[in-house]
Length: 358
Ligand SMILES: *Cc1c(COP(=O)(O)O)cnc(C)c1O
Image (tube, rainbow, N blue to C red; front, top):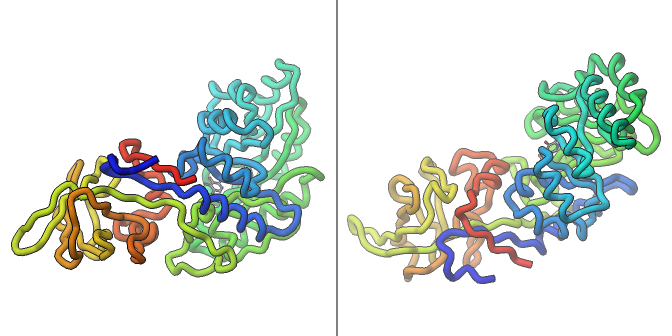
């Protein structure tokens, strides 16, 4: 595939994705399962096509946010558990069987509703119990675990395949995170059975929470895509992660304004470039960091190319990625657009072409 006729596009380097996944996998203690979080179109990295790379890199299971995403994984992957992390609406529950998805249940009532559907189909449905250890969203509230979890475990028609919890602030509050881990650990030790998965680690927790008994799986999101969740860029050195996504657009016109050489670039806020860049924001043109001039329009924006040598119509402009040895990281771009990296990845709309590098 070539990008010659694209005005704005992302490039997704599947070789790097696979290598990130395999390095993360290799870093896990023996026997720990790798749950690849591929919600939101694999964080904007073209989900159905990317799945094969997660498998080749060593992912054992997949996690998505909802049943629609589960169905898209199932089209490609038939032999791996697909865990649905967010609550499933009552009307959607029968689809769990169509897609062979594993729901996360947060209450006895929900477990019983799934069990009833399973019994009507003559099946046993695998589920995982979501425990709320402090996030304050879905999940069995940990203080009610003693009352609720034994009852869920004895519901006829379901089989509990795991227990997990989501960390609310792994990148900012170490004490609270350690507390959350300890709460899930105690619950797993008390109610867990052989063969179940117990997992709490997200990307940020991988930096400092040891993966130790009884935890036997991790849920990996951001770092798979080569991005460090921390502003300080520290940790993860052993993994040598490589960024997977680049974001580019083409120069549509060059000219002069107030004695400055300027270029009109074919990307605007309809391409996901936010209208509110900070002063320090730069893009790469002619291999040089160039400042942004004036407000970003719907389809276009203007940059100063005074310091950039010979920039011509049709040349690429890089928002995220490298050019002639200079680089703008997704973390830089996120900071300049007042977004967090997760938000940057999922905020690139369909209008922007996808160039997959195999
Ligand atoms: C999205 C998500 C993850 C992955 O988080 P990262 O910070 O991107 O690694 C893990 N667990 C749950 C429940 C999630 O929703």
